[in-house]
Image (tube, rainbow, N blue to C red; front, side):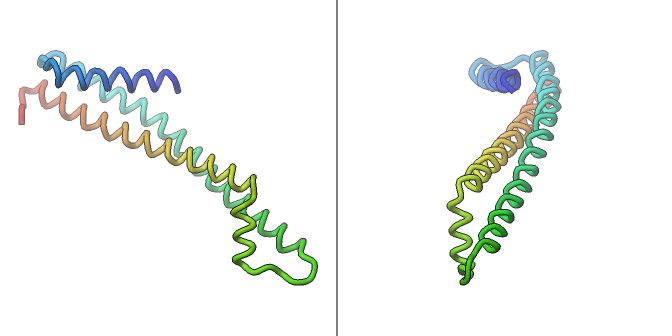
Length: 135
């Protein structure tokens, strides 16, 4: 993932440099290709991140269900209300840890989607410049 972060930083620097210093038609053509390649890289990372988030979501559901069953089955006498059960699940350490891991994975996946969109726009932008379109 560090190589990927380095790639993103390098491309960000190229975007900044192009609007600060300008870009030639030849450079724009190369940059269009580079951003298209970056989209492929992001797509691979996004596949992994999306799968991770989905699996973590399933894990959170399974953990919460197991905690629920444990609470319900281990009650002597009076069963707690659904609100009490929900509070017990929400305050469970394992449930919270897994929820945090899921939230983090989901945010990472969304970040990759944003990179993909940025690189797509950059590709289109530089491709337009390389064709001599300055709209």
